[in-house]
Structures are given as structure tokens and as C-alpha cells.
Amino acid sequence: MTPVQFLRHVAITAFVTLQLLPLAAGAAPDDDARRGVQALSDGNLPDAMRWLRKSANEGSTLGMTRLAEILDTAEEDVEARTWFEKASALGDRAAMFGLGRMMASGEGGARNLPGSVSWLRRSAEAGEPRAMQMLAAAYRAGDLGLARDPVLAADWERRLAEIAPRAPAPPAGAPRAATGRVSK
Image 1 (cartoon, rainbow, N blue to C red):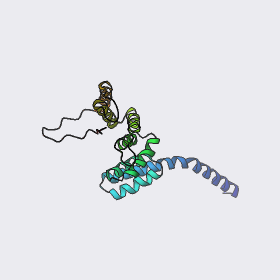
Image 2 (spheres, helix red, strand yellow):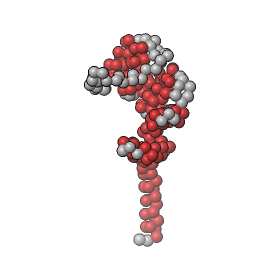
Image 3 (cartoon, rainbow, N blue to C red):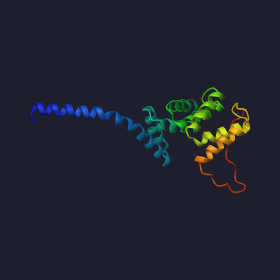
Image 4 (tube, rainbow, N blue to C red):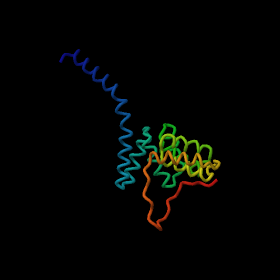
């Protein structure tokens, strides 16, 4: 290979590499988030946190949301709410639900019912079943600063039924699941 051919080869290789770098960089954070989700599924919380934090810091909404969910469970509410806010701003429907729920109760920051309802509505409109369920319950009971509205409650219940199969009824005497209801 002549020096000119070598330089041409290096230039082409560099150009192609620079063109492909954004594609590789975009995939890596979500790959790391999936590693974190798998580690969590395997019961390895330290590895899960390491991978999820890495992916969240690199911009993965999956990493941000899963990390926020773990932090929320651990009562690290300020950091959880921050990650939910970041992922919500990027359009993650599960994060919007988490943020709306935290705003409703005042976890990790000020209680903000109008903001809560706004994020829950955006999440539900994006197809998040938990947000649909929480809005239906809020409209049915008059929670979250909303007036009782059985028509809107029924509308959210209908939308939920369209996307989520019905769970079998619990056995008699089994404890009832929490509704996600937050009092006024």
C-alpha cells in the first residue's frame, strides 16, 4: 500500500467511524439500562443501581425511570423525583406517572395537585394503565383536587379496559390492593 493509499484508507475509516459514533452512543445507554433491569430481576441490587445510574446519566429514559422507581421505593424521594422529572420531560410515560404520583403526595418536593393531574393525564393519554386507573379513581372519588365526575371516571375506566386485560378476582378473604388514591 502506498502512502497515499494508506492516508486515503485512514481518512475513509475515520469518516465512517465518525458517522457511526452517534448510532453506537445512542444504543449504549439503553443497553446499560437493560443490564440494570436484568440485574434487578436477578436480585443483584448493587449491579442494578450501577447500570441504571450509568445509563440514566447517559440519557436513557429507561434507566432514569427504573432508577427513580428504586429510589422512590427506598424513600430517596428527592433524587427519585428529580429522575422522574428528567425522564418525564423526555416523554417517558411511566416516569410521568411516577412524577404525578409523587407530586400528588408531596414526596420529594412540594405537593402540587394541578401539576400531578397534568402529568397523570399526559401519562394516561400516552397509554400508561396505572395513570388511567389513578385518574379514574380520582374522578370517581373527587380526589387530587378534581370534582367528582362519574362520566370522566367511566371514560378512563373504559380506556383502561381497552388496553389491559382483566385480572382474575382475588380469593375470598384476600387483602385488597391499594387504589393509588390520594386524599384531598
